[in-house]
Length: 522
Image (cartoon, rainbow, N blue to C red; front, side):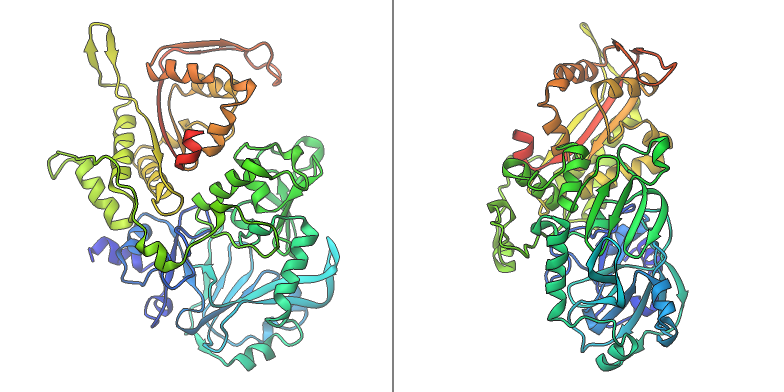
């Protein structure tokens, strides 16, 4: 292993790095979800400490997860330390390897091979403030099939997972774990019933139950924490003056979100539909995800690396049914036309493809696309081919299409974008925002004519293209592709004293999108 990778692995503390049987997941910055499919399974996307793919991600500054259950490792995951401190529980937990989480909770690491399933921790008397029929959720004992974000990583809210007790991982029996949490634990038989009750009470889709809400939704500028509820500014439409920055909340116990402005809410799938622009926040209600829309959200969830599991009786669409690991290993992908790159060994694209093979098993052609996107942006309209009909600039519109999870589209897009942003300051600020309308798009280019537009899942954008208010937007994109100036005059602008006339005189737009074949073709 090269020295850079070896140094990167030092981010993992020795207690975990040198532990027999330890397994790790890779997590992109700004996220808590592992990359890859079936990351908790024996043949899934988890890695030993000597795996170059893990080292490659860490060398680029990404997060990592620790697979619980592997090698007998269990973690007491405390979400509400204040409540447990009042109950005298925290003082009973013996000194062991301990991490303070990005949300202010704690991870207590133990060696306990007897525990082989996740167990919920609940308050013995207090009820959930949003559901008086449910006990107050305080945390979990994480074991087989689960993972926790590793120390040194960064939470989506910007806080670090800080190592606060650099002690050895203490060996403990299952009986002693239960003594530490006496009266707070629901047994492994009772816990699934509680989870199903929470699903029914929140009105969420059963297929979304396996996706933690805080992996896909998180309030901006947090104002209040109460047990499992975190409240702050709505991450998409923000907060008006009268809402005092408290118009959005998530509840990790109920695995749900709520918008106080529109008085709507739902589970992880509903939130992803809103985030991708498939439905409006105010239109979320029971049964809003159905038919093709439901299937489209499932594809988005799969492309984000979530393994969907159903706990209810709802019929699972064909797209969400999974095959066995043996069948998956035997699956042969359509190779299609073979793209051959005839470049010197020291060429940037050649070296970038080699780098990509070290950090991911994504298709090599995808790394070619990512490298070309980087080079097109770096050119910054400073080179061109002069033809009789006018200059041709090297800006590119690149669309990566492939099957969910198997092809690693998002991995290539995310790494290509991040490396470019690191090497070329300012590229991220000039990028087209996630939220956009045709008017906002032109307004952004008026201020940032040399811009990039990156989406690691473009299904939402492609769906929006069909709407009436997007009529003519494709023509605008084609005009920008030719680097021709654009002028627009808006009839009104809701922001006081804001201009209504916009001129993009020097456009240079580069696009890097990824999606599934079906989304791209719709």
